[in-house]
Length: 140
Image (tube, rainbow, N blue to C red; front, side, top):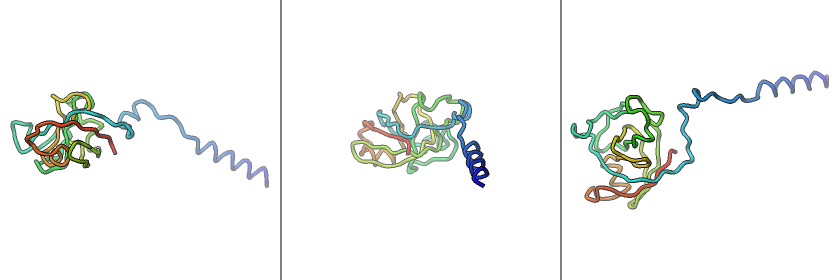
């Protein structure tokens, strides 16, 4: 009976052992603990001259949507949907902290920068008249 128990335990240990994942399998994974610093600007999805109401990630947006456009360096290939699309982020700026989703790409933004809808900008930076503000953000 003891031998059967030891054999069953050994078999379970072999079956439960985790295997590493391939680089291809991990391509869609995003590290959650990193904090990024950059500049926040704002855009109006309601304006066709600013890209319109359908972002690079697909879903329709409005000026009141709690969404952001991610800088091109972190977004990746601008012709494809990024691994960051739909990720919820926490953004902190001089006016406060809020949460939003990545739904678009910002070709003119540098690493760490985000382009915010007016709804997000007002919560994080404050008045739209400021135009820009320093931010920190992370994936949650």
